[in-house]
Image (cartoon, rainbow, N blue to C red; front, side, top):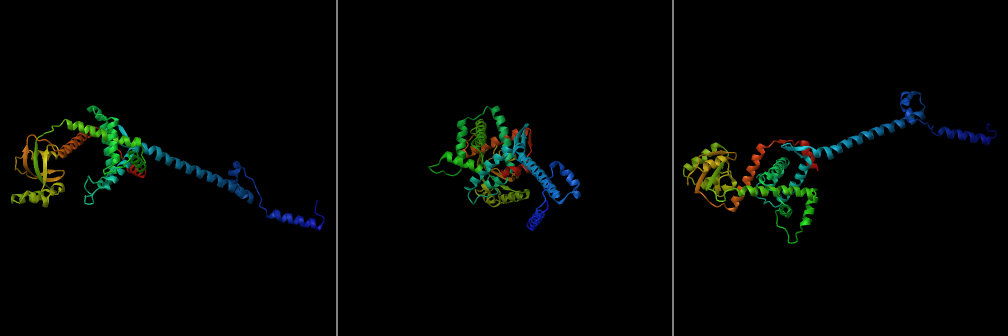
Length: 368
C-alpha cells in the first residue's frame, strides 16, 4: 500500500535512500566460480565482488599449498636426504654425512680448545698447529673417518679390541683436555659442557672416543712386534728446497765451513736447524725411504751427497752408529706412530675407498 500521509512518504523516501547506500550482497557458489570468470562482463558489480573474493581465496589456498610443499621438500632434504648422503665409501660401506657433521663438530671443539693453549710464537702454518688443522678440517675429516672405518674392520684381524674401561680412560683424558684442570674438576659437568657446545649426545661422543681407544690399542699391538733395541745412527741434516741450494750447501761444507753453522743458516727444517741440524739417534723407518737408504749406508763421520725426498733436498752427516741401542721414550713414541700410520696407509692402498664429499654436504654440515 502506497504511503498516504506526508510522514509516511518521508519515511519511505528515507528507507529508499538507505537501501540505495547499502551495498548489494550477492552470493556466488564455489562451483560457479569458473562460469563467473567466463561471464565476467555479464555480472553485476555485487556478483563480480563475490566472485573476486572466491578467486582470491582459491589463489591464496593454492599458493599456501605450493609453499607448504616446497617447505616440506626442503625440510625432507635437510633432515632426511642430506644426512644419509655418503661422504665416502670404504669397501662398499658408506660413511653418512650425519657422521661427518658430528665428527666436524667434535674436532672443531677440540682444536679450538687446543688453540687457546698454543704459544703465540708457534707457527700457524705448521701442519701440527691447531689453526692449520682447523683450516683443512672439512677435507681431513673424511680421511680420518675413512681410517676409522678401516681400523674397525681390520682390528679384529689382528685380534685387537677395547673394553669399556679402555674407552672410559680415553674419554676421561679427552674431557679433561690439554690444559691443567682445577682441583675441583668435575667430569660430569665438563662432559655436559662439551655436549652443549658441540650439540652431540654422550653416545655419539663416546663412539668417536672408542675409535681413538681402538687406534691406540692397534698402535701398541704393532709396536710390540718391533725390536726394542734396533740398529741406530746419530745423525744431523741440512734441508733445502732445491737441488741448486743443496749444491751450494755442499760447496760450503767442502770449503770446511762447520756443518752446524751451515745448518743454522741454510736449513729449512726449523726443528733441527736451531740445534745445528742435530737429529739425535734414529732407527730405520722414521725418515723417508731414500733418506734411510743413504744415511744407513754411510760410515761414522760420513756425509752424503744431496738426497731428494718429498720434504726437500737433504745433506746428511752421520756422527755415530750402533748395531743395537735401546730407544729413548720420545723416539719410541715416534716409531710407534709412524708404524701405525704406515699400516693404515697400506690398508688404504688395498681397500676400495671412494671419496664422495661435495660442497653441498660441506655447507650443510658446517651449518648444523
